[in-house]
Image 1: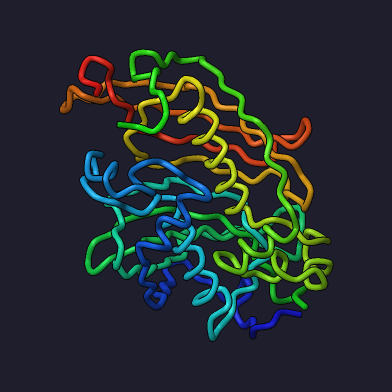
Image 2: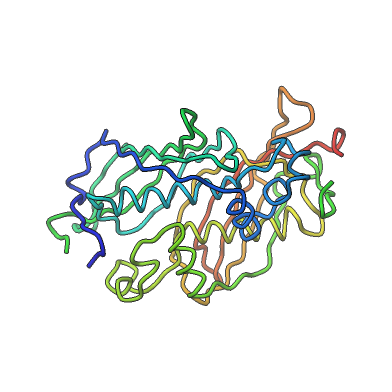
Length: 157
Length: 157
């Protein structure tokens, strides 16, 4: 029993479907706090060191950008108005950080259904590949694909 | 000027080099706190819902496992006794979650240098691909490759 309304099972996802999330604005304090916990490199936690780095200023850990994009995908797509029956993740591919994310940037995620395949061994599920682009203003800062296990409607709870 | 001693520049990394990190034991509270922030799906934040999920119990977000593996890579390899002159990340490929991570599991990361190529346009850097496996006891729970920009010694600070 999900706390949100699942209306999109495997059958309702179609290659080419596009979803857009709302925006999330990241602060300097959040960038430093995240990096201290998971990616404590000088250019993510120390403004002076960051000024001397190849970024020239404090930038978010790329891992932080990825985490924020997953949050937006989960809250606005998987658990959005038309929730997706996501059973879990299999993996991610082709992660590229195109541009750094800076304090005050507002991230949005564009999600596209790239591929779907029914499970050959389990009739209750299929596999869906999503392409995700994280955009700040008009610039793509991160792109990635993810493969998820999606419940089928005919066996869904 | 880094707060740790960098002794491994691009030239000192050799294909086949292997590094092993120490261990990090993840708690249930950390799993729930991380998931509430970045991946608030029922099987990561709610024990009852998790019991009904395909995992059968509360499991860490795979994104959390990835974040903890980056932390171990940064603290124990990049900023370890022989620090690596990492300038930043380019991307990651082939992320696979092989097994779920549960409260109390101790993660260790095995890192191998898979490939290195000098930059053709910038003489101060090269590109290194690392393969990383996250292991709990003898079981690989996550595997991924990452591509990083590494400073060359002859132009290093």
